[in-house]
Image (cartoon, rainbow, N blue to C red; front, top):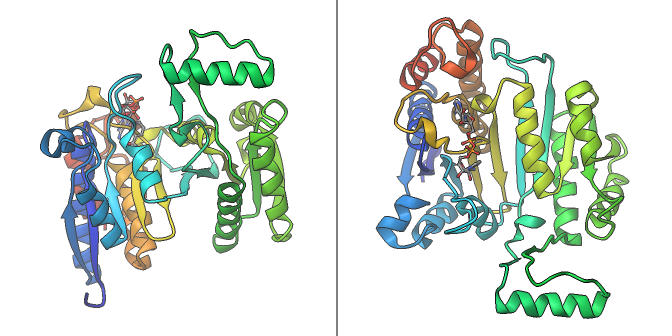
Length: 361
Ligand code: NAD
């Protein structure tokens, strides 16, 4: 590969994914031509489309493309609730070992929000916790056996009409994400890491996550460290968000709190994210596929375009990344050509807003 030629896997996703990923792709192509580098896209399927075409929601071909390019831009993918296939998003993160999910929430002038001056980064462990995928369906033979085993060993009285999901927190994955959070703090001039947990109740699992984070923090004395219980953090985030800098979270709390943080800065339409592993990285908006908006050309493309800006920084195109981010922020600040969720006087479409961002590059 030539210098400044980048191979990137593109997974459009579904629902509004088709529209927002096309928007981000055209912004990346525009900034690449302005900054003089080349992007070679390899479009791959995942989710419902892949199921129809290959009989598999996450084909090996898609995974291999990301393994080869090392980086992907991804639109959101629908996960049927309570039935059908497991979340493709969760499976992708596990199969590629994308252990760290970075979700920055920074106030944007012009994005309608009750708050200003928010600057929080949620760093979420991405591979285990209740998302590890070890579940027992109600009434299944295995489930009954498992319930009998636990009742016998622990003297509990779990009834046979129960369903069970295992919360798995390992020492090594907790240490890996805690180290990542402190390294991120150092590299990005952040001052404080708060580890979020429920160790008062979940003594073994959350207690382990907390203990490991505490131990890792001792090697980073220049970064302030504290811990907070997840229910308390939820309240404090809406009353005193200025108290938080980096929130280091196990998977589930990170998922929930990052949506809360998106709400502090103007909603899911402006919240980007990165999934980082040792060998590859996948960039995607925090939001889902918003099926009600599919095909309406009204979704805000900013979250996916800002994720693409994070991706450009990751592949070393720092100037292009900063320029793309600046163009998105300018478009939102001016508020002349923006989508419905930013509550403008005149509502623009996804395509119109994307065109305005490209004009502002
Ligand atoms: P969602 O994020 O898709 O949408 C919730 C609401 O937020 C929408 O109805 C819409 O009003 C608003 N919204 C979201 N994105 C927007 C945008 N770009 N512009 C304007 N408004 C926007 O959440 P949901 O409805 O709970 O989930 C829908 C599907 O997406 C589910 O199947 C879920 O599993 C999946 N999901 C996927 C991902 C992912 O691919 N990483 C993440 C979250 C949810």
